[in-house]
Amino acid sequence: MVNKCGRDPYVVVVPPSLQFGHDESLSPIITAQLDDVSADLFVHKTVVGYGKSQQMYFATVARVVLPEALPHIVLRAKKGSAELGHDVADCATLQLEGGFQNYFSLQIEKGQEIDVLEILTPDIMQTLVRYSQQEDIEIAGSYLYCIVNHDHRTPDVVCQLVESVAALSRQIVEQITQIAPSA
Image 1 (tube, one colour):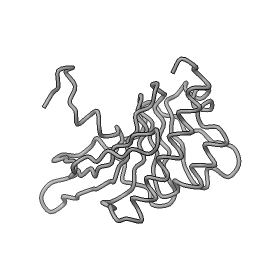
Image 2 (cartoon, one colour):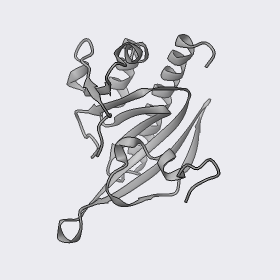
Image 3 (cartoon, rainbow, N blue to C red):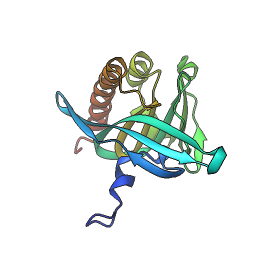
Image 4 (cartoon, rainbow, N blue to C red):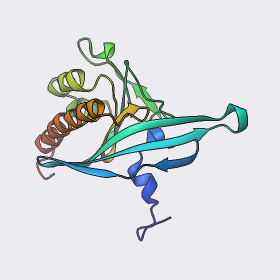
């Protein structure tokens, strides 16, 4: 299905790192209003392989629309990382200060190091460590994605995901506003 803009709505919803496999499907999308932040919550399923070697992968995803497009960033959690199929195109791995690499590995587009460092401030890294150690974080264009491995729609996991999304998205939006006041 293609919308009037010529874009597949499925591709707009699903983060680039989860666009792999075949027989992809989404659960119904639930939109949550978190004070001034709106987040879409859904489960993505994809299949890899065929026949006896076929495997299904599930990811619970929260997506927030950002006020401005940002460089492609993938933060892979060291604990409970999702089964991401794609890395950042033409990627570079960036080491951040302190013990951040003990919690996340960071992939960015080559040449975007300065822009990424303007976004991933020490305050945002602290929020990531506090809230998001079980989640992969992806920023692609004007979307922020928090991705949890498997279909985890239990009250505890959804509550943790919502808290993480609310805290992280507020800080990133605030940071975007400071960098580009027109956003």
